[in-house]
Amino acid sequence: MTNNDILIRLRYALNITDLKVKELFTLADYEIAPEELAGIFLREDEAGHLPCTDRVAGLFLKGLIASRRGKRDEPSPAPRGPLTNNEVLRRVRIALELKDEDIMAIMKLAEVEVSKAEVNALFRKKGHDNYRDCGDQFLRNFLLGLTKKYRA
Image (cartoon, rainbow, N blue to C red; front, side):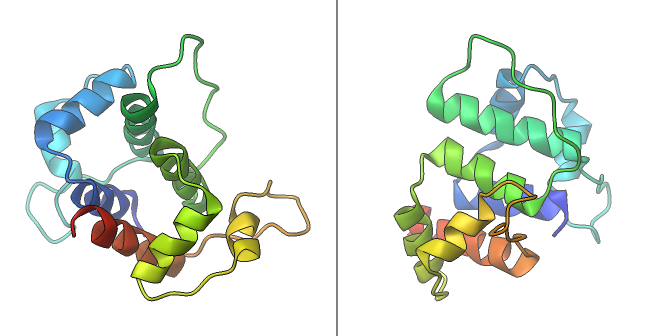
């Protein structure tokens, strides 16, 4: 999944307005230009589409966490490289304060059964024996389940 697609689906699932998106970027200490804001929320086939970088997607997620849980006093750690599906899932989990059972229930709304062990494997460190990459289909189903939960 592209960063644009992730942000579009997340924005729709959580019913985030343009004004709120701008506020999320402000919470992440980033001033986004109006044309950039409009461009990243357009589909690839639409005129004016701008590819969303890992940095911008990460700042959106950082702002989402800050808006839901409060802004941290100390500076956030530097990004750890490319924004993976596992990292997106981790940050959404933090922002929405989801437990393993919540993620399992959200996946069930998308008609996908996952075990607690499968969910735990997604949040392990990359070198761990039980680590599992979060595939595009898993993330897509998770965002679908979020949509069903928050927009029902």
